[in-house]
Image 1 (cartoon, rainbow, N blue to C red):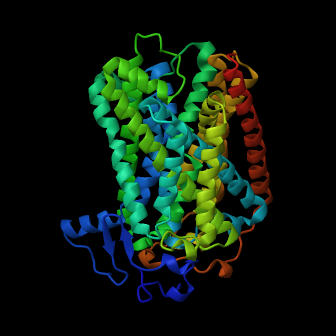
Image 2: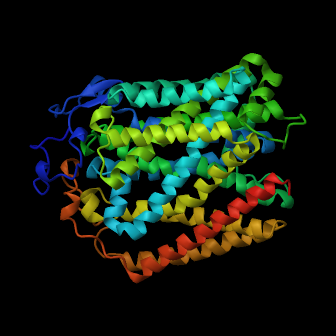
Image 3: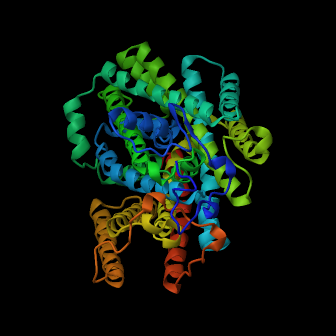
Length: 549
């Protein structure tokens, strides 16, 4: 860990920007401990493995938490309605997952300040409110979908709805209220292990692996022209459930709460890759065994919810498979609720300056724990009083909204990672900037296609390809303009990265707030206005779908 003696002389320990003394000290992970004064170099496989085990947690939990109840619904719909034809979307999302989460990992380890706090401090309340309000609203809706997953799993297993929801809420709250970061992480890691139930389900259903391998690497758009708008809606749902905005806020704050510093960056990146592999394997397995279970049946194209998927699996491969899927759904719903609730409580703690750490007991961070518990209780109550039809529509809508709002979150992330006062030698290089800018462009393109499909329900595939080509041309022109302005005649990466393992961001109060150019304000305002319109049109599309249009 970083100590006073090891911090860079430009940023002494007394001036590091860590906001809470609970975020300083030994790393007490679920699978090991690293003492604050342990600054020895890790030599040998055994020492490196012990360090990795102690660090594992943030990347694993944020990724597996993303394979939540909404993911079960989205991947189940993709498999039941379109077989394995949309598997290729998962492969394309792997680099997006890594780059986005690696950037917030750097922000957390280097700054010691949560994502919401950084946005507000660096961009001001006006611009920061856009990102933070999005998070609060979307997280609240997402948390409701987690309890929908609980009710679906409980219903299939023959458990009473009210008792199941109340018990799940009690478990979620009690796990965080122990006042021990290690105990919470051990519970979360155990739930992550439970997600591996999807692997034996895959082999018990035995889908065609050769077909899965083909569709994983060969893009294919299923359905005719009449279904193109619906398919695009589902693709955006897959993007939204695989790369969700809450992940950015969660991982940055969790890295800080676990007391991880730049010295352990490579181990945390390994932790992130472990999580990515597990989430992609789980998602692919769900699409694969759902496709196999419903192929050649009347259920193809008739997806309703994850509970129906469990029944279909049982009809195809036996009752045990259905039970295992329901248990996996229950496990995923609880860990998703853990992560989303904690992400929101961390962010609210950032915004309002409350003490927020799992290292503190309830008495030491009353506001933080109150927010966490209130979120869980409200979401559980909504699920108990709302109709099943409304909840089913909400599950799909949340994933689509997450996909629509992701460009806004990615833009703020990109700006923060290019802020040299914040990240210094850890700032983005040209390649990461180019890739992330391209990702934002693709996400905006998808939302444009969604908008067009709502306005013109019978839009042709040629028109969609035209939109993609037009957005591509605009993206290339914008990238060329930006590259020309920032091009230097010196090196490809002009940032001096020497000694960065010991560099920490100075206190926020000592930093000069960046001045936003008129062009950037216009661009961000235009993006925000468009995304607001897209959100409204998503709601229209979902209502049309609910009415059977």
